[in-house]
Image 1: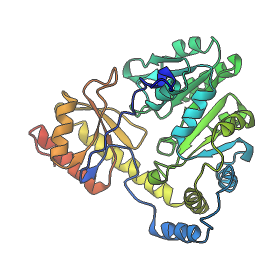
Image 2: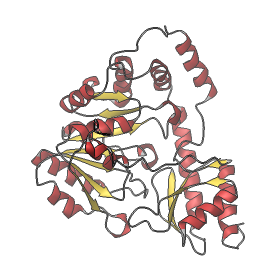
Image 3: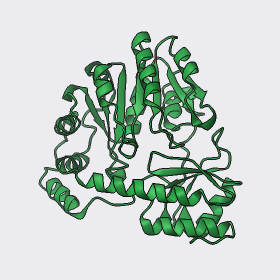
Length: 352
């Protein structure tokens, strides 16, 4: 295909293949749909809109609502159909991209898509940050450093002192540190105060996890007005569909349902963690997200054995350092019961 840029012809596909199963624990979604009364309210709001008209140019009403919800200046809020698109824009704007490994694959994919120089520094043993190497890497020509915290796919929560050290280095050298807080609600940490004090720190957030809105595709960036302005210009006009905006405005008016759901996920996550620690051959890692990373003797076999029992999880053994690993989303209590019965049955032992 001579009309395409050469680097796009070898671009890898996003590593996901849809598989159907009665119990779906593979994508770190919320186990619960939006509460019915909010879904009805959102549908009423959508029905009242003129569908023949374009939506807002840059989702101004949603940005204002998010600014009120987060305590952020509206000119520093950017909304898009999913945080993945914001990652692409950040990688497109960057002179270079710094990353860790393993990590969320869309950072590398976005850098390659934009033909932006990319470097990933491996995590240390125990999934700890290679802080000295990262600080040294940020001494060179500035760019954008993507850091998920809590981390995906390991579930690790990096120490606040290390985040502050990286933020300080970004301010000294001109880098932009982007903390991807997709799982922020499950961790109890919140870096908004730090980001408001440091224009070289930006936060990525999503509605796909704790909000229970993975199906509508919505994410947002909290940044300095300068950073937000650059990223906003890279997004297409009228980019947030009217139905997405209607749903977001509805949940931003009444977000109280999130707290109860987060508490349930945290309780179920800890129950799963305690139970899986008793498994004779699987090693479960501590998590501050809505999923657990588990190292098994054979990830392919573990995946197949669970799928045969109607449970879908996500293999992670293609990542360096995650050999034998699978990732398991926290489901409903009954789904988690089924999971525990299955994993101990696979090992040939009973689960009480």
